[in-house]
Length: 272
Image (tube, rainbow, N blue to C red; front, side, top):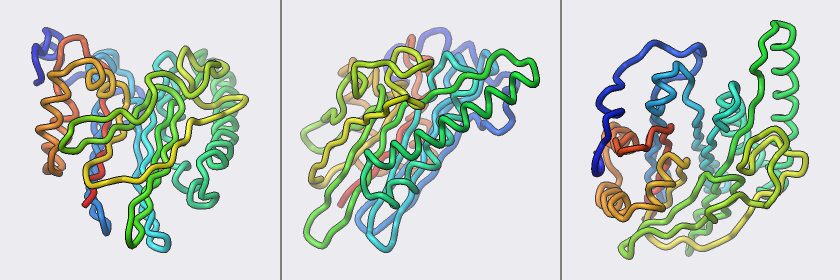
């Protein structure tokens, strides 16, 4: 709990399962690679739980031994579409592979976007055959490739939409990604935020050195309160000054706060 939890957080407990049996309420992971400790957690939001809708957030963590590269991807399915969890799952799964092939986020996103377009078209055809009207899907994306070299750490960071990347050190929080979409154009059939699939995908990409500290990728369920509330900044900075136990991390990712009912996902890489 951070601040006032609100009545919804105390009123909504375990509910009926979703209509999508492949979508777990919670997903968490931890790993250690040379130079970093990683914690990852995704928690289904209260409104999705209440409405029997799937968790639309997804993440992936991949380490390439040959190049000493850690790739982290976080995706947030666009809520107005029934199958956005499938889009998020596909992009989170395929983007690390595409990056390690191309070593470039622009080329990787183009390739992943093509695969997602095919997936969306197949889903639309499948659901038309079944007379199911709800078949849309779209997802945002934040991705980072951290390269561990002998004398430095560098990161290539890419994003489309409102999924965000943050850096935490002794000075506090730094927002790396912009507040808005990577470009001014909405993706076709993908809501108000920039998203995939897109007829012309153009992720924002930056390169930077990484000092000691922790890098976090978050969906807007955490990014929005982190951006807007000093109380959230201070609390999460205290909790995440060092890598917590993975189950504690999952509970912290799912913190209760009034009016914040969305899915919550965070992947943190503590660098030293």
